[in-house]
Length: 98
Image 1: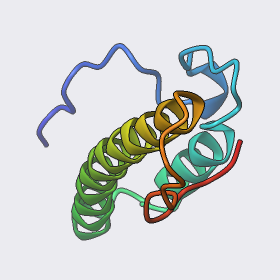
Image 2: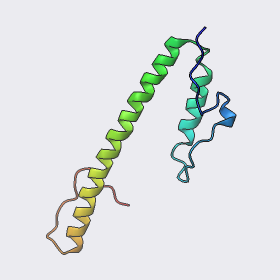
Image 3: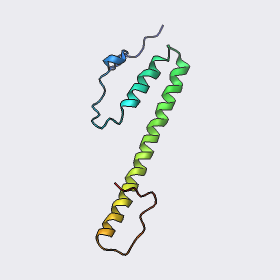
Image 4: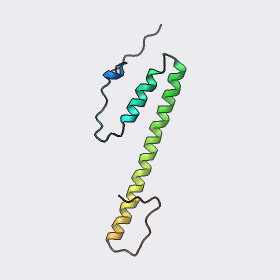
């Protein structure tokens, strides 16, 4: 039987030292990950599905973040133009008031 690779992260979910998250943005994710890991039951096919889902989730986070950065840029440009007294310019598509 092959040995599992050595990891700095413990198998016991209660002993995982997660990064601090002062915004609370990842608390549900952390719980879902530990719940899902507990359901693998040592089955490689389940593990591969979960890892594939996590890879896609990471790609989604990167894509959504890039979209938000662009949206913030457009919103800030619009706000600046309004402040500078530009003619009434409609807000950019997807504008969110804060």
